[in-house]
Image (cartoon, rainbow, N blue to C red; front, side):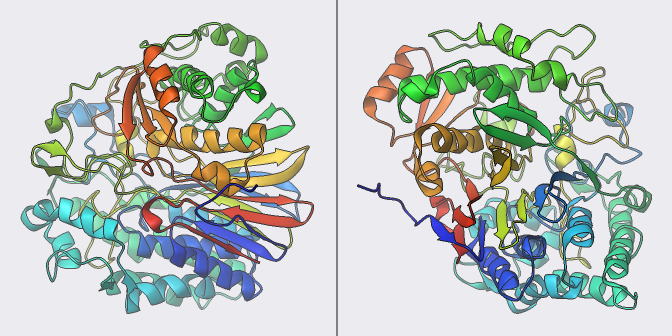
Length: 600
């Protein structure tokens, strides 16, 4: 008997789209229906997500893409993670009396990378005109879209900040008070920004030249000028409790562009997993698989305590290595060959025991890495501030002196496969409405990804001008028996390479279809340092959905895990799409009741 799922696993031969919002999914599918390919559809869906999920991402955010080109028969990573401004040095922050990069405000802004990543993908792999790809986003920004409840909750959470400190954001989001769920919301300034980008690029003679002209408008034209002016002229309140001007300049934007590179890979039981390089946390999944390869997961059950325990303990070791070794490889040598080697994995695997570890235990590789910074959470709610952190796990609101629902948001994710076999996995994020004040003439705010830098010297992820922060954004891609098979990913900050791994393992080992694997009870560890301000960890802490069997929860407690039992459908945000023998499939996360898959 087929297991009940919250949604069907979509199947067809023409094309599939899945994303964290039904409107973006519908937009992507409409592009496929008009003859566009997966790259056109992904870009149109991605720009739409900037409009309809403004609490989760925005035009000035960041984004890595992993794609497969059927024409080139290659898997490629496009890095849309912008770099720190030229003026962003450790000394500059120390001169301001800061020991952490603030989690909100202008100081944490890096070069906006998402726009250029979409442009590079469209130029190199797309077929449609930029004007056609941007048209749905412009329409929704200009004519309005229905607000989901979580957008309203995010606005309410930062209402006081907007009204007292960020008047440009108050003018945009609080013109008539906190908006109501289901009400129509418009952002005419954002619509005009994208319309002007299209207009300024329209005179170029070829599709590719028009895309290049759009890049110029963004990074060397009116968008860069507006960002430069706003950062230079406005001192705004941030999570440090003080007002600061921004360090980002137009010259920083002009000097940067998105890049393409080969993925980092690991072969696992007939699959080849593809991830970003160590400028992101993606290799954590590969290291986790290297550790798990030494255990007989096939003999376990997907909701058993052994399954959860082995994954959590393996990931504690992989994330400890993230803290000790990962950083921008343009600035620091990262020994990925050793980290993914069989010998190193065997040595690390021996540290996994029957009891939960409460230690942050990175490996030792002579000549590489540094001792991680560990800031243990104290439980003091003053440690964070409204708008700081990644929206999935940020403390969004305090009610009656207790933490309200901490899962009111996400980053975004989308996956697309077309009839020609092209595949896209993209994770847009950053520039969410609660990160910094809206720039009035643009209709959006800057991101805060620089909070992932450390202000201590000598760490792989220490701040330096022109350096990429070690981003949490981590799309996933898998080949099976050497053939492109699965594009998948999730929002969730430090949880991304936990939740995505769980879905992959349940699909690969237990035969769960994509929707069954996404619907299954989720869990994640809070053991290692958070990538978001205030950068704290909770040793031994394991969050699990209450849908796990009581016997599993009791056994995990017996093994020493500090269990935090969450609401039944509160963890995990994965979407996934696959291609096998010409059949295309897709599935979406049911939590929050907004993600959707479509296809035929």
